[in-house]
Length: 448
Image (cartoon, rainbow, N blue to C red; front, side):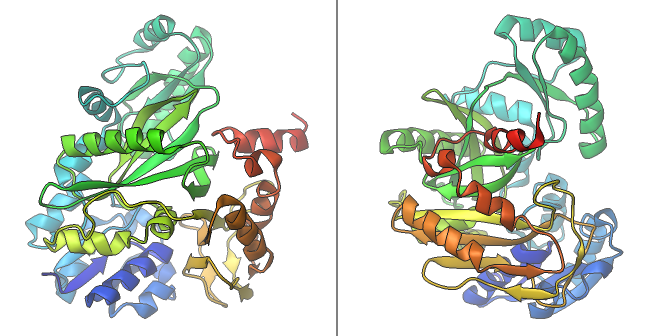
């Protein structure tokens, strides 16, 4: 059994893990950079340790410092949250080699699904649909062009070790593919230390739909249904909902079965997400996120399953508390409240001078904000997650509008006005979504 969990993260996800640990009766250790000394997760954890200066590479990404913090506080387990070291197989191995429990999937599963080319091969070998593309990392621009001409333009280049939109480029013809290859390669090398690229057929109006899975140490893997994540900016999600307006029960069964098959192929345990692209009645495997997702609360809202608590149970050697895919109840929407200009999307750091949270039925706020908190410029811009639940999608949208109207954040610019606009768009209200939704919504205003 576990007794003390070090949380190798910051902000709202650190607080979410602290909440689950308290429910499970576990002590917690917060780590923080010098910039996060006054962050709420530091105040609310049972112990805290400063692990370095503000830059993430010198603190939250410094494996030696994180491990030292765990050892000096007597932590017997490490939860990585999302981002930072969450999908670092080497970090998971170091945690285990130091005699602590890793609250996450096996390092081998992280490594196999973290290499996007290998993940594609794994999916295909287990009858999970994939888009036409390269079976292995590309070796040259010439190979990329030859394959693109074979499967047909447009195509998209993606970093094999990537994520978050880095190292991704779309090419409509051979000339643009030559330039895109060099640009994507350099960007991938800077972001991930590996410049390997793979190529896929590019879909022009896909939806981004993902399936949440949980696996225990006894071979049981359960899918918890799907989330619609199509509203994005530069491949970064802004709004997520469950269930997807595009998915009926027959499609849900097929997608969940595919997600379980891909997870089982790598001996998956803990929480994970299989991401698909969906267009014209067909879905295709995109990647697996081997961690808890930012948007996990919408699945919790419609299933009643505490996903982070399940992670703790699984790591402690307990079986899943659910035996089969739960029935989805109602509709949930999550809106990411970011510290950024809602028009230019420029980051907005500063001190929170006013703060008021929405209340009422069906409203949940996951945040680390408090009045007087200084939003640092060093990390992701996520300030809060507004999650609303309704008996159907229409009620959830109404509650989201009401909540946004009473969500007050002063001192920094936020994405709240942008969310208000999105929730008034006819296409959003009708559930006509694609990953290009935001581009199409903004383009008329920009004059392009």
